[in-house]
Length: 455
Image 1 (cartoon, rainbow, N blue to C red):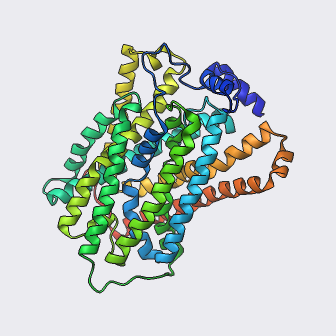
Image 2 (cartoon, rainbow, N blue to C red):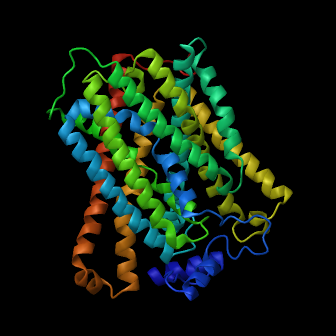
């Protein structure tokens, strides 16, 4: 079955079977097979990112508005379980990053999760995983637009219609999405990473300078499964950016350095998440809001939100860029329009970018339960992309590149860990869907759902 899928992929994309990237010959083979090929004679050279640039882009898209909900998670489960959970998920995400990177290096033709789905499950797998990537990227873009809306509203004390703030924020996000190469966004990734770090620091200082009176800190709390898991989804999805890893690695000068970027990302994210969540929770207490910056004294809230705006903007641009590029590469793979300045190529790219950003804007302002749908899409897709499917990658390669079941038996600790990783993704998916759907039902029952396109 695997040989048949590899042959079909080869015939469709005119490539040879994957070879590990280990020697100079392996590096040459990698460029023979990967989506952008040998670029010496190309007008547009995609593979220009250093691992440092990729690390900055990873931080920009992952360490963003998701971290602002972490202190409220500690308020639900307690500080000790919360810290343990955030730390464990950071280590777990590092492990799954390693599995994703190894799979990419063994299969250079993989540009996105859709390509990986083809190798694992055939044509249906490609369509399902590609669809999930686009949907999650659009919803993530919309989430960043809403974060920008909240920030602009906080800075101006909501003097304008909130939908107007979202529209204003969509314009620079759209502009940031237009470059065809991620290299053109790499310096913005550095700016975004610095901004979210400074915003977090300002937020922590603001919480310390103006703490909540009569606050208390709970070591551990019991709660219903729904409330507990709803709070747990915050740190789970604060690490949810792995769906972009294949796209980023595909544009690296030295893809074999990809784990350096992943280690930098996960190390920074885990430490920063723990420190930010603990400090803000300790000084604000159980009343901390989500996003946490909204719980700060007005002056500090405005300062923290203002500094975070570039991160929200660039994160949104990266997400919409990813959704656009998946379609673009799918349409023009092995075509001159992919790597040349052709009228057709640029026209299609411009249309795709406009469609993705327009879809994110319409969903963000036109769907009253959009925040719940973001959680639902994250449960359906990000749970697999960040956690579960990484286990399937290892199991697939060990089985077909090794000696089948006997290879799993010989390497049983890794095989068991991969199965558990897959099951963890399944649990997060199912439980997250339950929490999201129950949240939607509760919102409608309580009458808290606003009308569409309202201010």
